[in-house]
Image (cartoon, rainbow, N blue to C red; front, side, top):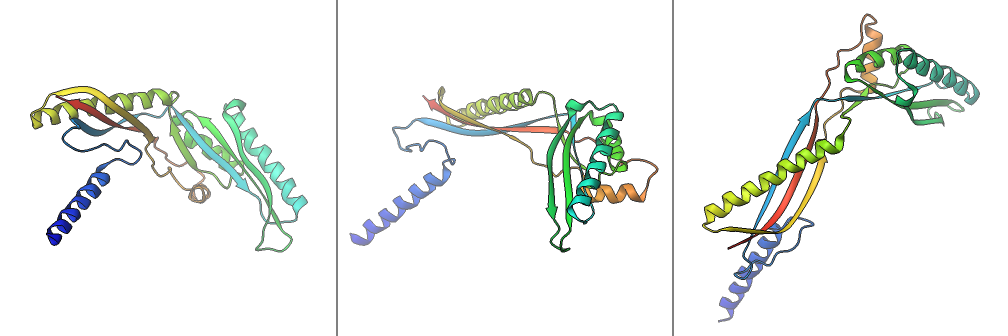
Length: 238
């Protein structure tokens, strides 16, 4: 009898482990037995849209020199870059400072570098043009672009609507296939994420490409904006 009992215990432990593994992290732990007549589905969907805003990351680093000279050079470069961007028709409200600091260059004793970075919001079709203007004015650390839309919440809502509809559809199909009737919704949760994609190009490559060919700015194709939603739902079954 003892070996048989041990075998039953092992089987029960494996079943419990499998049940727990099937549960979604952060979701309610469901009791799976004959009294729990529920059906669980997880569904995700995605929406994409053409970008309406390009957020440019524009900045520079001065050459290593004494602190006073680095600051003076940085001030001249900073004013030149912002003046060039404004002269191109970009309003001051679209330009925001990200960081600015004077740091010791530890590879060269008693030398300092001034670094400054901004974000500049522009129409997607002007992204290449404004980056070109900034680099021409002295922006040596520039080129990263974030693409977005004016109403991100609306895009997230669309993704959530699609995921919810898919969850309901999947539940109905599953119930039909199992020969049961889908009942009321017992529990639902959701998660919405931006699709993580690499940025358009690296900052150093942009500066090198610009210096290699002064005739025209780089060709930059706007990237679509995507949002993905996941819905986890539990339905009663009859």
